[in-house]
Image (cartoon, rainbow, N blue to C red; front, side, top):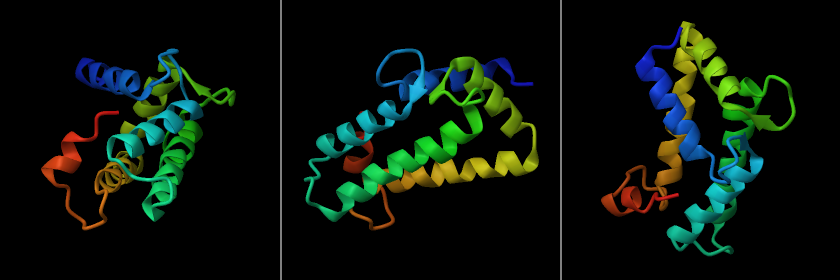
Length: 128
């Protein structure tokens, strides 16, 4: 069972990820996130990191959000599905440890220049 604190934090994360503001998580949210991220960081479309980052956002959607959370397989994740999937993940040791992938993926998305460090500028520019 999720604690009140976990529900609050996961609900906030859901809202942050819902860039289309339709109370659903879906692929367009991650397309928007990728586009905004590239624009905010002034990464040109022809830059090799551009396509890599866009594909990373789509991979994040498919592997970390859609597969574990989209219970009815309609391409959308509701807050109920989101909280239920996160509860299931957090209740098992393997699931809990799998969250590391999400953290690593976020770290890599912030490291624009691939130097394995996140500068202050890279961190504050992440305003998607």
